[in-house]
Length: 130
Image (cartoon, rainbow, N blue to C red; front, top):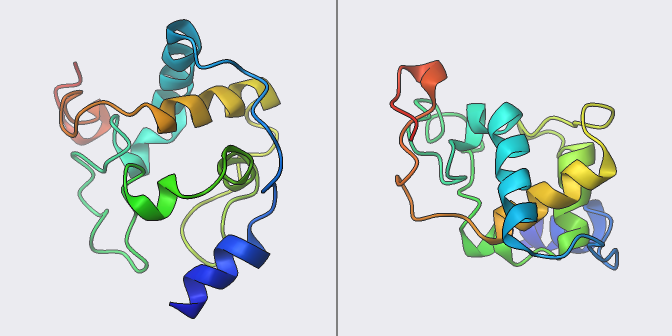
């Protein structure tokens, strides 16, 4: 689809930026914690929309971060998306909310997502986060 090609190759920056944070278990856990503080409202605790009541009904739908479209971005592009958002989708920018280090750790978490549904539903939606 031309829109996805344009987004991946022109709109989204950071393609060649390398993640300076090593994918150690503690860094992935830190990324999970930061992710759970903000991103889980739209992406669920597991990054796969578990328990998010509107994920499939908005347009465009909230993508599963485990899906091939998201996972095919480079680490630098994922960090760029976290920082700058994607207009006109519902993905908001988080520049100024998180440090660069925190955003890189979120990228690590996105690269190492748990099994779908394994973390329960976000408490904000009355879920049973594990």
